[in-house]
Image (tube, rainbow, N blue to C red; front, side, top):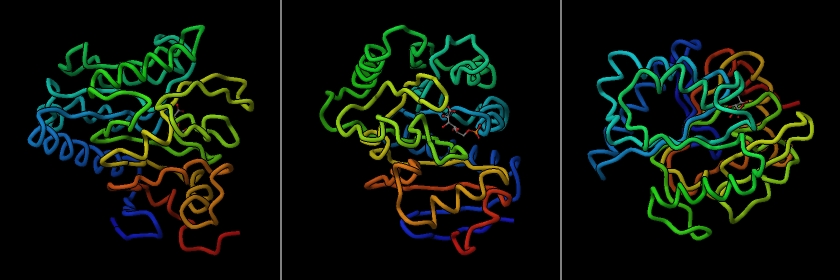
Amino acid sequence: MESGRTVGHVSDLLVVADQAALAQEAAKRVVAIAEEAVARCGRFTVALAGGSTPKRLYSLLAAEPYCTRLPWRETHLFWGDERAVPPEHPDSNFGMARATLLSRVPIPANQVHRMQAERADLDAAASEYEAEIARTFAAQPPGEPPMFDLILLGLGPDGHTASLFPYTRALRETKRWVAHNYIPKLKANRLTLTTPILNRTATMLFLVSGGEKAAVLQAVLEGPPDPERLPAQLIRPVACRLVWLVDQAAASRLGEKVP
Ligand code: 6PG
């Protein structure tokens, strides 16, 4: 079952049956955006989400029919955020993408732009990732951020997205494109894209699955604005498509009275 509707400032909300349907719909959209970007400007730039929801999507993109259709030689992969661990660590977002996708597709190694979040100096790592974005897009930080063709995001049960966690410093970054963010409740450091660059993307695709996300999805989409508590509410791309692709379990509280 699919239903699409415009909800408040959200440009698109698409509800699909389950995780498998969500991954299939996301794969179709990724390929369509990639094909259009390459036809328009000769390359496709995308920032991947971490966490567990995108795993199915990445595995689909590494297999037929999607793998052949994706223009890997013209694709540049970035990450929306990364944990402060080496790429071999089980928590690494890059490691997850390497296992499910990168190790199985013919993308040129120099077009895979990994966040080096294992480094001791994460402020330097953030600056260098910003410089890598700038080189790829021939842009100049801290000027106007470049426009990704697509950014994939997830939604945490606490309303975080990328590594923009509630009440953390990176929420208030208005200039830098990449930030080192310390998450007190996790006692963990992260690297994350910030709202200036996130909100510049041409298409933002949120992937949200599971009943444990129902309450937070309702709060983010239908509750009062409270972006410090619900950082996903900061994602309001200025001139593009914002698509929430959610499964029925995650959407089960939408339209109910917000507590
Ligand atoms: C991360 C992600 C994070 C993730 C959400 C949802 O590094 O953890 O970037 O923002 O998208 O926490 O994670 P799940 O898909 O595992 O629910």
